[in-house]
Image 1 (spheres, one colour):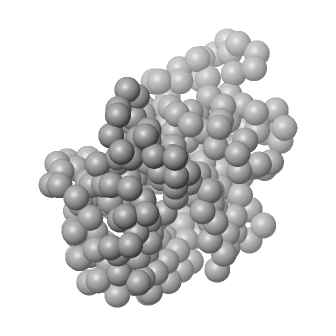
Image 2: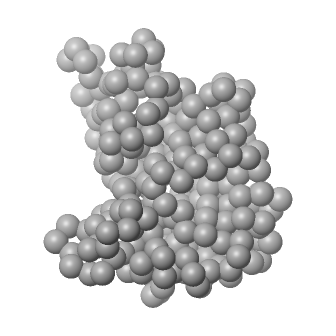
Length: 253
């Protein structure tokens, strides 16, 4: 399995528009973060989790040529807004793109991209094939996905476990029952917005506490805000089994 981090930033990305903080002015490429998404290559298949506003740029930068499906964590715009650019894969692959998500997510996609579902569709609009999922394992092209339900304040969000890899973003609470699904993972990617308390995201200390509790061999932090600090500084403060993810990072395992 190969995991490519397409984006590791929170909803505004880094740099934030008009911000003059040290992180936003940093020349370190590790501090340049597009909106959060990952590309998963497994068993010869290609998937993305979330299609945020930077989707087109991410596909070009990672040189993605084929895509078998898009899987969604939730319906917030920083995770869905780039969906129109799926049409490039429609044209290349000559098929509708399968989309997987909770029914609430798919309903919002229907509303926000209504032109793609109209009876008289304009030529060239994206074509989707919608698949509603629940909190139980499902397969896409022979690859199993295990949803992990987490809470993003009061909104239920899905993380996913694929083999020994678990990906969780936009969370500030995971029940004991759902934590059991994570145990045994070799790699955990976890939402970590900033150091200060936040309404709907894990802070750095909360994320580290959970990683320690789950006894995960290797963890990467994502969905990072400019308020977390400079990549080089924060990275130096982390335990040996925890790293900050960054755009373009590739994991093979």
